[in-house]
Image (tube, rainbow, N blue to C red):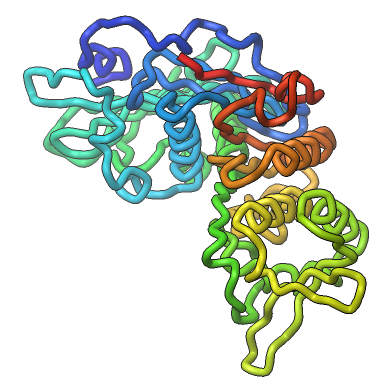
Amino acid sequence: MTLSSLAAEAPARAASPHAQPEPYGAPAASPPDRPGATELRLAAFAAHRRARFPLGPLTVFAGPSGSGKSTVLRAYEALARLGGGAELGEVFPDPVACVPERARPDAQHRRGFRIGCTADGPLGPVRLDVAVQAEPELRIVGERLSAGGLTLLETALRDPGRPVVQAAWHTAGSSAVTRAPLPDDRLGTALLPLRLAGRTEGERQVLAAAEQMVVALRSVYACDPSPRRMRAATPLGAGRLLRGCDNLADVLWRTRSECGHRYAHLVAAVRAGCAGPVADVLAERLGDGTVRALLDRGDGVRTHLGLLGDGELRYLALALVLLTGPGVLEVDAVGEVPAALQTLTVLADGLDRGLDVRQTGELVRLAARMCERGHIRLVGAVSDAVRVCGADGLDGVEGVTVVDLTP
């Protein structure tokens, strides 16, 4: 089954209202020396059909509940994990939920979904498209990596009885392509740097495209702060912020002494987004070896973070993520690539969850300033783009790509 044949598994029906060829304008370009995703494609994934979404340095998906915002971010995170080498079953624990609702099985009772993205970088735009079979068993049945109109890698399921796909990659040597089996539970693009020696110009082109895509995907950090977990003191550890920001106090303890300039920006951001005066943000070590975070009110009063509201805690955590960078976050950075050439992409579903208009506006403006520098990108989802930043909405914030999913 190839990418094109999997498309036939679902019946023809009206496309998503967000699925026009270029529905929101051309994708924003990434700096040429920093690989980053510039487009996400959901050809057939849950409620989305033939949808293409631009991804700029700061992209915000807006729309009411049920419009598919979380689905878009879930697909992006899935591609990122596959790009990092994760097994298919880990990435899609409930794959049937990703199949379009009206998709009908073929004669062999197979159903699936298709996702893809484009990553820009030194090689120019590189496209990756993946077809996944969800039923009767989970497996990758087709994958295509291409650049400049040339297919560099293509895989297809030839023998359903074997747990492999037949792969063919561009060689440009004595033969045009090289063929070999690859496992059907991992992304072939992520495996290529381990399989190719780069002996021919064609193989070097394939390697460059695969590495650009992998670097762009592995830089993704999904963040969903959990206020309940952030309230308690936390053991001292590595000081790398977890996805739920459970160990916020530990990270504050570590980062306060590492970069005074960025920490001063964090204090200023907290002052703008939290109620009452804020002179400093502190972390203190307790007698049992744990550490807790505090707000110094400047008049001798220190407020334990456990006393703050959910919105204040989420705001503080997201501001910390934007201001610290990959060295402080639990993200699978590409060790072979210098940090100066990597861009961290933060995924934040429910970016405005629990936040008031003022807090969300401050957070978006902070993100815009940080994303402008090129070291960090943000893809978030909000319930209402107009409510977030006043009468002009997010369109009034310079540098924001707004994707409105309102039906």
